[in-house]
Length: 263
Image (tube, rainbow, N blue to C red; front, top):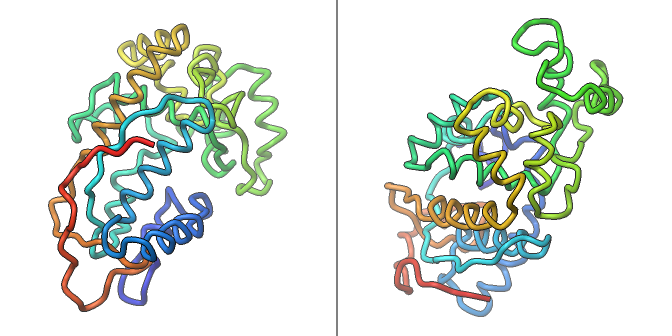
């Protein structure tokens, strides 16, 4: 949702601002759906189907997306800041965060594999390159040649909105992400920590680096679990994904919760 004078939006949350983008694509999808079947498909369902399709289109696995989510009535920047994993997080913090949503260590590592595609900003890694844990030195868990490449991409006084690939094949959904972690070439601290700082997550990273099918199966399982997490607050089917439906009562859901649709 867009921010308003009385509501801080999640788009301006630390993990999203200057990073999350392409909201206009969701707007276009929502507009087309509202013309054909008004009040039926939530923005939340659009986003999770788009996530599945992005995985498939970049070479990853396909799965049935269970539908029937409602959109929230308000935004919460605080919730976004608390829920989204920090790029500075270590493995122990990530395990605790995911366990709070009944997601296992395997779920954590598999879902982190979504970083098989995409890029991240220098803003998220400059501390790794120049002041890891306040040491004034780079992260020791980093391949020297890779660190040199990142130094050139993200100089200390450079533009922190410059982006780099999250793995060596950032437009292909594969297990290269895990191979990179094994070779100490993870872009984000929150990625590299899964191999470097915890025996339990290291074991799963190693398995996925050697077996792409195992990664794909675990990723599907994790995405299904993640997609079924429920918001305890009342929701609605927004007419416009950027704003709540206003003072009108939420629309009644006209479909059974979590019907399965396969494309």
